[in-house]
Length: 133
Image (cartoon, rainbow, N blue to C red; front, side, top):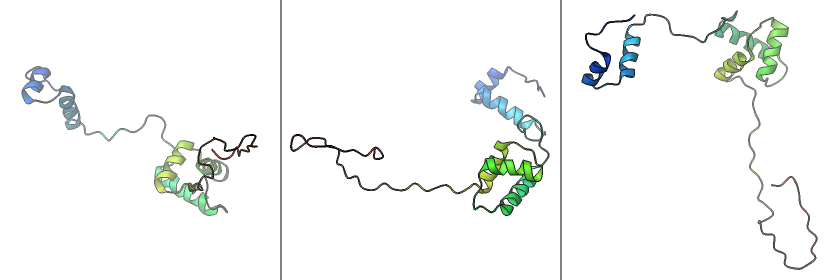
């Protein structure tokens, strides 16, 4: 893939007004006819679409409304014999919008205390609630 230039790369880039990294990247892209790279490691037994079909099947068989990725991953192994990475199950369920619904953040009630701790009369008994912050 090394293509010989008539002049040094530094000189060509200076004359053309581009950085050397941009020129090298353009040469690399122009010369590739290989498929795009994928992450290293072994390929799973199922493709992403096949695994997503299995995940949808597990969700359909479940009596619960929402399942988390860990429970889906365990059920795939135990019930269907599909051994895959938990992170892959999480990625696919996230992309497909199949994650379990999470509780919405509730607005807090108006505070009963304004933040001042000055007393109006001496020897007053104070009480606090540890759940309020």
